[in-house]
Image 1: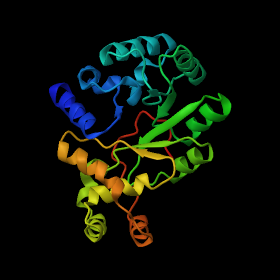
Image 2 (image 1 turned 135 degrees about the horizontal axis):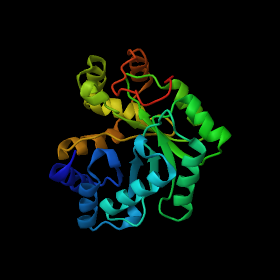
Image 3 (image 1 turned 90 degrees about the horizontal axis):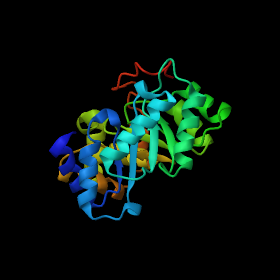
Image 4 (image 1 turned 60 degrees about the horizontal axis):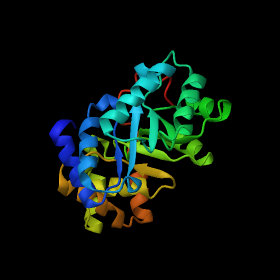
Length: 252
C-alpha cells in the first residue's frame, strides 16, 4: 500500500489498537506511514516501528544512506527494529552486521534482525558472527512448511515473524479452514492467524487496508483452537510458497 491508501490504513489500524507497524524502503510507503504516525497523537514509546534495508544497499555506506532516508521519511529519530530485507549473493555478512550494530549502539534502532534468511544464513549470522538477531521475518502460513527454520529459531530464542500469514488471501477460501471457523463462529482467515499466533515465539503481520478486516484480524486473538483443529490444519498441503525467493541463497 502506498500514498493516501497506506496513510488511511495506518491511521485506522492505530485507532483500533495496533501498535506494531511493518514497513520497508522498498515498499515506497515510509512517508505515508510517517505521516500517519505524526498525526496519531500516540506516544512514540507505545509504538513498534519496523523497517528494512533493500538487498541492493547492503554495503556499509549504502546501509547508512538507506537508514537515514528511512528515518527522514518516517519522521522519526529512531526505529524499533531494522532488518536486512533480503540476502544477496555478494553480501559481506560481517560488514553488514558491524554497520547494523553501530546503528543500534548509536540508539538509532533499538534492535536489528533479518528477513528471508534460510538456515545456512541464520547459522552464519548467529553462530559465526554472533549477531544479536531480534527476529527472522519469513513467509509463513498454514500452507507453507517452515519447520526447519522455525525449530532453529526457537532453539536460539529468536522470534519468527510471519509475513503473508493469510497466504495472500488463499487461507480465506480453504475449505478445511472454513469448516474449522464455522465450528467456532470465526472466519477461515481468523483460524489461519490464530494457528500461527498459538505457536511459541511466532508473530504475524497481516496486510489489510480495510478497517473491518483489521478488526477481524485483532479478534482472531479471542479464538481457541482445539487439538482436532490443529490436526486438520497439520494435514493441509504445506508446499505453497507465494513469494519468489530468488534473492535468497538456497532455501530450505
